[in-house]
Length: 289
Image (cartoon, rainbow, N blue to C red; front, side, top):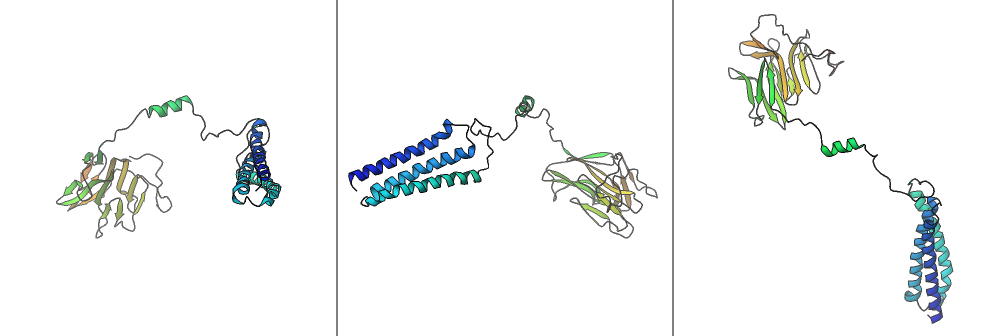
């Protein structure tokens, strides 16, 4: 390539680079233009600079002996201009960032609303009150049994053991209190069992209802036979009619009766509405425990 040709290529490259820089700087001098025009000019100008550098390298070093390449510069600049416009339009369509008010460039958006000083101070100070977890307690028949954290399903705390039969026992698993029990059922039928918060052997004429904090089983007369209520995650209250060898125990929150006379008439009141199929989990309006 002759010296004059090289000079022409260098001048063309410098000229196109300057045009690109001016194009990129134009939006900062005239900030009132719409955002989409700003994008077209800025990114399009960057494209002109990059393409001009590539053309310069191509003409000077890759194919220096082809002087006819210089004639391609106007055509390539036209292509660059088209790419500039198309690139700006594509960026405008892809990025749907809302435009800011005229006379200002886009500002960073905040993700949250400003908080009042009182809320900020409270978060810095933490909660005013904090509850220290107490012991695990089972309340039954006017008594309280404290369940150690060391108990487990295989090594429970035996609350009532009558003649070697576990009538009421509890244990802790995953920081949760479980109470297992056996209660009186109909004659010639197996006793109703509550094990690991699961129940079985409920006579077909009886009904049961429960929610996340309480379980109740009633007989055919809607008389409560068992109530297991979590007053808190660490405090469970047991009311019920419990089967023991050769007898029964009626346990209430305030006391108990061993081998009551017939008819059996426990004093604790119902918790839920019945039948459960149409009132699942629905408690009676008045408080009970």
